[in-house]
Length: 136
Image (cartoon, rainbow, N blue to C red):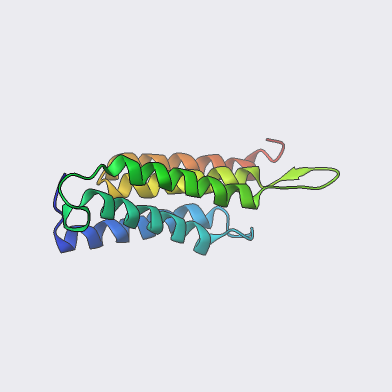
């Protein structure tokens, strides 16, 4: 495990803020919009930072345990945005975007900035594709 300096943690949280806003902008016209996606990304980053810093967890902790709980918890949030009416099922894209945004937050928390940026761009491209090809 690594011990993070104060400024490194702040940088990671700020990068998480930017990534969450970027993804959230693609969903701005939906109920789960910019604020929701930003908070999910930041929350995943902070929990990841806590799990990898021995100042918080001690020297014998396993960060994968916290990360797996982030994935599970976000799954419950995603399930809450899916709804079914008699004629259609809605919210699946929002749920998947929430789950992907949490993954970006975890990557930022782990310091994997390049992979987090690449994933953010891919998620944004997929969300933007509806504007280009509405039938998808």
